[in-house]
Image (cartoon, rainbow, N blue to C red; front, side, top):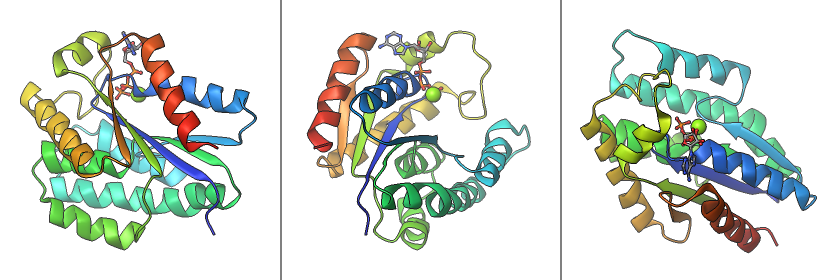
Length: 205
Ligand SMILES: Nc1ncnc2c1ncn2[C@@H]1O[C@H](COP(=O)(O)OP(=O)(O)OP(=O)(O)O)[C@@H](O)[C@H]1O
Ligand SMILES: [Mg+2]
């Protein structure tokens, strides 16, 4: 039986996920919670290799291949890290998860949602995050925040790719308002941190 809590952080590149995830992990630990911090794609040695294959390659990669690689890495991550941690009662905080596949490979690259749902059902069954925080920000602001940082495969995509990714996230949030909370990420780090803490207090009783 799953006893822990699975919380995912989502958003376009540069939306402030990692910044808030670090705050959240510290906050939960300050409340004596057992917390596992992880990320996707990645989170296990093999899944991190898949991450590098997807993000660092310069060769073209078919979008459906990308979906399958993401879910292969995810299957491993769930089986070896996420499930065991939840079963032992930990809170698992994950930087990106399946919503990102729907947003990037679906919205961004045009893979049909029904195809992604098929693989999702196979890999996850009915396993879903208990809470997803979606950090929403206009693309231009996110890109300004990232500055001159070296770009990975997705960050190098054109503006309209990122617009489609953002739109896909917002559509998903509309469909699952109980699970996915939209956070206006144009606010200051401190303001956002307070909103995140309020959400964490709500789910971590
Ligand atoms: N609310 C904020 N206001 C201004 N700058 C911010 C805010 N939140 C984060 N930043 C800055 O924006 C940059 C991107 O933030 P961060 O790395 O947390 O985003 P991310 O969503 O994790 O990005 P990526 O998807 O590329 O990992 C960092 O330099 C960070 O310090
Ligand atoms: Mg990050």
